[in-house]
Image 1 (spheres, rainbow, N blue to C red):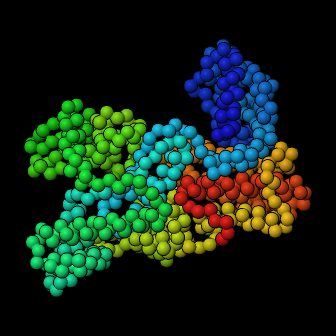
Image 2: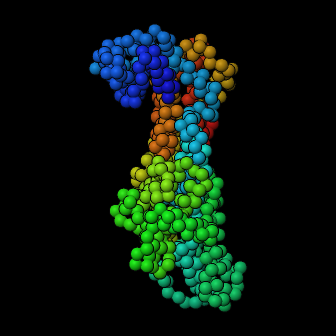
Image 3: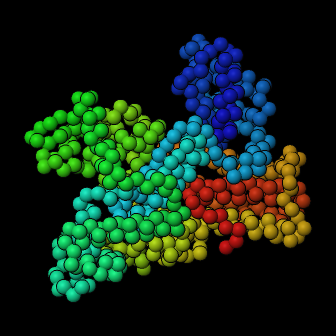
Length: 551
């Protein structure tokens, strides 16, 4: 980021000095082969026509002006039809240490979001049972994305949508009441459609204790008591599991409240006024085909019942009424077919396409002893998020969930994640931070201290290829954060963390620090390690993972 912005500023000044207009197609990016320098620019090629000279001649003029005016540029090669391959001086990269030291826990932050208000809604699992490992992946993605967006300059609010209305709530109440009847001595065969988990039996036992006369009440009243208690009990458990997983939700939004406030009817009126809702066969339809959907969709059935889609449109209408510039939903990958429909709804509400996005989270294959663990909420055969976190730890679980793109399948190997070895990605990264902390402690035990200030004279000792490559890598952190925010993809951070950890372990193996001999080299390398630790700490924080001082 710093290299790119530095070069962009210098090139813009030169272009303006030539009375030329900066072209939209100009690019500045690292070359694919680092032997071609630190940055490559196509400015001469895309500006040649405007300048009325050949690309190579214009490249030569720009290169001459750059080298004359910029002390941080070591050399410029003109390649092919007029590419500028720019190499910065070692001093330019050494300055990265000072920049990291000055920024501290804000190093890597960018202003990409420009203070825009964003909402990230995630997990939002039906409160019909404990969170399972699949929900955990969505929770990690949503929480980490929130951290990234805030670090990238957005004002972010987090939300959990509670599906506390509709058929699933009826089945939940029915399931608890059924178990209560069995516990009360009634010999009843299991129905076809109900929640079978042991937690339902536990809830039924508590409801019976709180309401000894439950079996004497009218069926509907008993069912409502079972449903309401189960909903609140399960929701409390969900909130605790998420808090223990270091996941934040600032707002818990009830679907029931949406219906009670007449929000659905208000949204229907908006769609009718825009000519986007129509009556047919006794049902209310939404013209989603006007927005690229393959067919129009029902909002209210002929029997008067609302579809899920109707509530979802009203919910998103409510979100935009709260003033968000960007709404991001995190859904399970099985909802992929629903995405075009919601995009159509957002456009119908008069919002720009770019104001809404969906991140799809693929399934997690939980492995134990090499065998896949079957998971089903209704069958009750699943490992809960709480159980997995208790077994492998919060840090390991979060890092593993974020170790691949969210729309890729993930094999979560419990045995691997518990290993304290370099084959375990989270251990590999955390150990890099702990290793640096250990080196600094040993330095202090020997009477050495990390210099308080990184002066040019001290940093001049950083000059070998490993040291300069490390500085170049640390300088990329802002680019990684911006890419993660722009693409709504926090996995960029976990990939980068593994790259930094790999570079650190390689550097440590090839370059003695405390035993470097020359005091200036020792001091400079301690400063470099301190910068690496800062970047790892900041990156792990974006993943919601701790950076231990010892392991």
